[in-house]
Image (cartoon, rainbow, N blue to C red; front, side, top):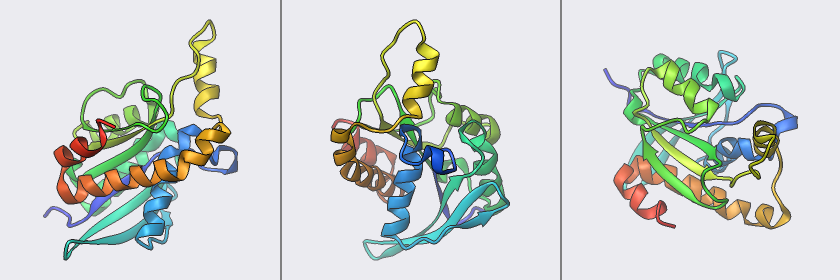
Length: 199
């Protein structure tokens, strides 16, 4: 029997070193959702912080699980597939929130399937779930300057913090990301794309 739950997974790296970095957009957006819906996180098999919540929207309650993998980005799939298997959640009821360097800071793209776009967390989830047919809320963080040390630049960039101007805009951006997740769950992918992708 299919689970009544949705699974929302915000990607990031655990630990103080990574707090507030670009690569932790998923964690930060998950925290906004946790605050909105009073979700308390607890340990799931040492693989993730996991909490249960319910959205009361338009007179019906939608139950969801909110996860922040503790596996480090490159093994995010271990946590997501473990939770999905444990609770019997199908890929079409999974929403993954992650940072995306192909989008300017502040832009959001909602999609299902498609390539991982070089994102190791997404590659790991595709591998572990054996499908890419889950919804993704891509949170733009912009791109490092391309140059001779492109790889180093990329790593330093995603693990770097935000400029003051961006930091000031971050709360609104994270709130938009949380809105996008809720829209996928309550109104469907197409509606979320319509509302957020063109911004």
